[in-house]
Image 1 (tube, rainbow, N blue to C red):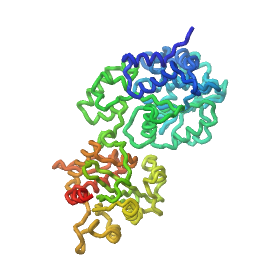
Image 2: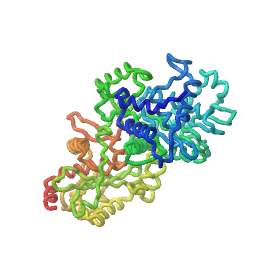
Image 3: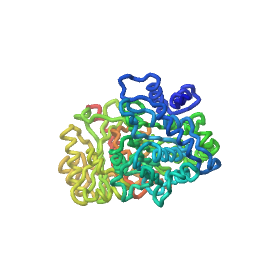
Image 4: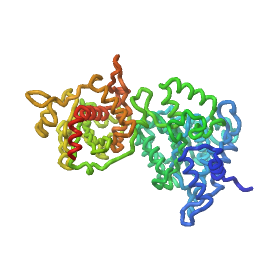
Length: 567
């Protein structure tokens, strides 16, 4: 009997409109279907329908539902699940027959059976994938999260007479002793991450993992296997500039065809536009199991509550529709903040800019900003640099939740100052270097007056009090910007509007993006606003530096316009 081709069947459902999917899911399955129906003779890969069906048949024959109203019944996979498994296991090398994909990102709304799917695949790869001494791991930041998929597998095995006879439950793992294979849950702080020889790694809820090193350790642990698989399964989340954002953006580029990575399979169920969350006709784009696995009534109730209670909206957007968001207290949403546009600083040679500086204590970042504009162009172009004491680097990475300060240092976005304090002369040198190297002339440089006198004297000596001044001893009016709602309210409102309109081009800086997502708003009795941190450990120094520069730009707008006209 001929085995079914679930990819082609799913593609027919997508093409007919019976399966409503996101644009990126459509692109990926369209390419996969084309590879099957019109194979390239030069390709290194072929589709093996038998290998594609092996794990599906195993799961549906041996795995049982472990909870809910269907407990104990054979597990029946949905068409979207069968197509996904077929893609992972069906494309193999023409010469060696080894699987094409060794890494996959599977983004799907909550309650669509992702943990059940991962648990079934874990059972298959533990005992039926032909791998001796297979090591299967469910990993997450916290052990409790890592154990969700593991516990699902334990319960699935217990419900199945066939699996329970072959797989033994030990205190820490599931073991298939016939091939010395095991399945275990691990957390990022586990002492056992080194020395692994991973066959399958299930990285659950990727959006909550801040530590890129966990991903790198698990990838490295698969290097000795013939056909390993790293399976990242997740909803979206409200933690920004973490490993999720990096993998999501990479997955989008692969799905969109911008880059080619034949070993990486991105399946991203999401809304194509944020506004679609109120349109029931679009809900299946992020919830392919809606109406079968996920209850429609439950989602309708969540959406209705979010419409009436905006504080609950970020949770619905991220968990049910995979829209990347900031927390409910945030000043702006992630979509409002994010701007992928970039620019070449050399195109601003000879032009004038307005600067801002946020000077830190020993524990925070320091940040300097320049805003430069072009005549007849409403966009504000932002260039920034950050500074941190070298001796506090490891502590900041640890206490700030594995924020990648070390990576940003390698990328040239962050300077580590020797010792345990930020060296303010480094900030001065940065402004001077832009002036000398790129011909950017600072018209005015504004600053937070707190603990800044030494730096102001140094800047005046380098640039003169026409550019920066403390207003003392007969100098020009101070360029200090007081940190309060009376000073910052209107500039913050206008900056927010410009960010929403994509009129702030900050060259897609990951540090500024992260800083902006950490900003909440404090409102006084008169409706004036000022920036505050959502949480004490979060950093907003880059956002404050930008706001200081923006405030200076507004204060000196008429003078700056004259410079633009002259340019």
